[in-house]
Length: 123
Length: 112
Image 1 (spheres, chains in turn orange, yellow):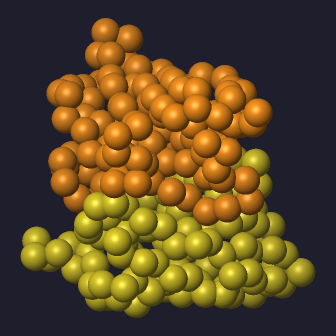
Image 2 (image 1 turned 90 degrees about the vertical axis):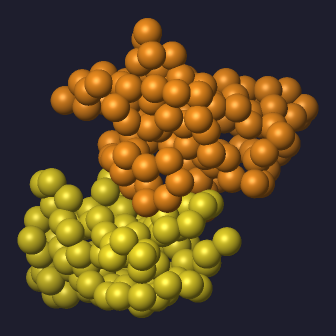
Image 3 (image 1 turned 60 degrees about the horizontal axis):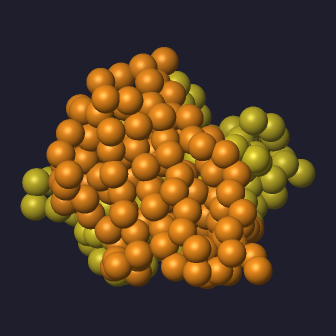
């Protein structure tokens, strides 16, 4: 079955960077893009960006442009998300999710989601 | 950005009774290709979100037929015809006609 398994909990200081990985299995990695969505404690869902499964094409929410990088490694079927210059309000659970749309620009929809990675930013 | 507004914020339902959640978007979600890019997700306590409905009214694999979606343009509804204890969680609508993808604020469904 399709699975997305994320890396473990992270604790970072303000100003640091964090890299979260998302190892996929059960499908052809190159055939689907990956999106990243975060959820602050007790809050709703916030889309961060999208990365193609077979090219370097990415789409980032403007809010994160300049400090967000999404990458994929087709040899290990793994997607990664790096967020830099962390602030306390970046404390959240970060999810990767497979995009079923096949589109580059709109119409994204997600299934399944990874189990989530808690990133805590605190001095 | 497209704003997605869900109501109510929370819902307490007797098992076997129906429940409805409203989602309104600040712009039409109907694309020129004829598709409407509105989706519903459910997040059970302590779990990751899971897809329920895609493109307004299409039930995803494994979703029971007592869960349905309807609507058009800017107004959408998720309906559970007979609520069960397994339906407890937070429900989110999502649009992806335009980037950034945006979600509604969520509706918490509890059992009375």
